[in-house]
Length: 428
Image 1: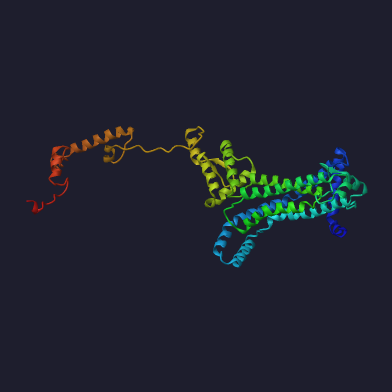
Image 2: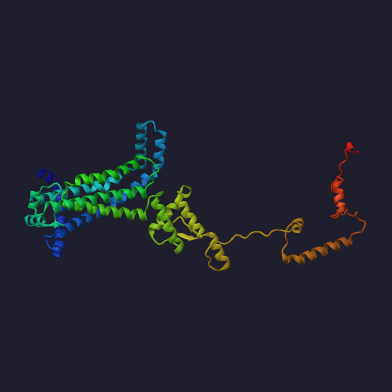
């Protein structure tokens, strides 16, 4: 064990130094030998590590989104080479290489925490065995061995015997109850974090290797925590429970405010965004503008949730712009310009009036103000006719009046206003 500790000395020394610094602060508040001082020191170590890993977490989110965008292409490859698994794997790896994505990117935060985990494990194991490690000297070692968290020593394990637990000043029942509860909470938080990612932030209808990997991790990690957790000291359980709770909260924030396109989380987010934008008439946060800008840039490639969002803005008289802002629609702007009053909806379309039979025969409708022109046109026509001789042109035949004459002509088979059809000889 000393050999392993020496191999991790490059990380155990900084980790022990950070714990000691936090312990000096909390020791002044709760007492140097209390479990609160040492337990909160471990919690603060986790928070510090996770803050430093935020850029890595952002990179993980981007890589996961890139995997989501590749799912349609991955599905095509699966359908094309469904009978050739080797060719299917080769095409998948080629697609990953061309797009610059990594299917193992979701494991990056866990892999990055591994050195700190092993360093903390060896620090706490040194406390349990009574050996100094890193910057923890004899006085700090005796203080840490006296620290209890809910009756369980900081360095005690679930598998420890009664003699070892009594040497640390605790009972075996207290140790096993506290460690069992912490293992259950640790596994449950890990399972819930992965489950909300699978049920809310991904499209489970597409069966791809990435989806299968995520589904496998949802069940594998909680089982791993439950199996290996019985061999972890109480201080390490505090570390993993804290980091799991941090991951769960961080994941919930990302799912709520920056969901994956096409997921249930995006549908809920766009519904909230629609209510917010239609109520205020504009976007307020930069994140909202970024999402609207991405939706506008997609054009015809929008999914059903994004199309519903754009349609809802249109019905409210708003229009999404390419820079992510939201302005009033064109129809509403025109209505405001013409009337001089701000309207709440789009201008109504005016239906054309139906023409009368006389207007259709005369060639079109005339406005009510054109009566003067009609009188002048009639007088001009009458003057022109009066100047002509009476017998210059033969009078045009008058059309038959509606009545018996017109009906008799129609029944006799004569055409109106045209050459007459000769009667068939058979009718004579």
